[in-house]
Length: 487
Image (cartoon, rainbow, N blue to C red; front, top):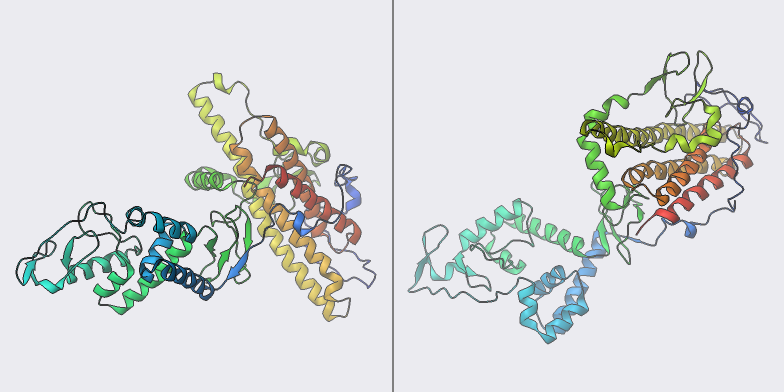
């Protein structure tokens, strides 16, 4: 919302300029005073948050040291080369004890299953002091030929060219023998012995390390741009990770932007669908709508969905364009898609139109919350700037005003969760569980709009009232996630 904070004396009594589309709290007859009797308004603890879990942020050097320690254990225990130990760790997800146990019981089978040794070795005999390479068809000295454990032999120059091309294509630990239908992997020490360019050997080492990190079930690179942080957690879960280096928030399990309560497979389907149908949905992405009463064009410039027409002063919901007075009790109807009960008996074209209508319903709400998050980020910057101004004018300290920032950050957190409830609902089958989910979704939506309204008028909102609303919104969010967040 476009508004400015006014000055406030030390006892927090002040007035704030009215926003572009809303009046003072008293004019709304308690629209936001929702019944919260079913909630225990105790301040939530971090450990109560269903999204919370323990993880560790590591530097690349820490993980390299960890990898070298694991390699050394296999090297000393099994008396194998470090390069072979690294490939075994990669092939078996760093299960060190499993590798040691299998190597002692059936070493050949372990190597075969790891694609490091063939079921049957090829015998290629070279007669005389030279032979013809089957790739370049040039005669080479006998000592210029190299072969893997499979026995397929090629000249060093062809091996060099082949490995260079594969590395430039981004393949490293997955480089296979050049022979047709042979899947034996090229070991690191073999590759380094045939490659002549030091810069490509360095690139191989970097990509090989990346492959090892990705193969570990408890390690994941931070997806932030040029961020060297690696996350380690005891188990691979669809939980939220926030990188302290680049501030990127992502899902530990799939590595994309965090998406609770929607699970990893569903959010990938939703994002793909949104990308495929982006042109279809563009017409609803505009920032303007007409007032449902006087039809004047209105621009949404704040995160809250409670709008007031600047011309006729009509209060309405930005999403459904319905009278805002009804939203205290009927918000559930605004956020729930009403399916046609007879659609199965309609024509194919009618079913296609219904499917598009359903998608647009959920997409519009998904997109609206994304835009509200952007607008509320602007509100956060305004609050931060206003607090800085107050501190400089000796009107309280940063600690005195910290609750305003806490409220803005919590609003962002709750709205983010609310945004990702819509892909979840879109793919849910009609059932009693979906009805429960939509009810809780509507309750959260009502409290988020309430909190958004109060945050945008933070200086004139009673601190106790604001903090109470924060607790209610967070309780609603946690309740929904506890009931529907699946691991």
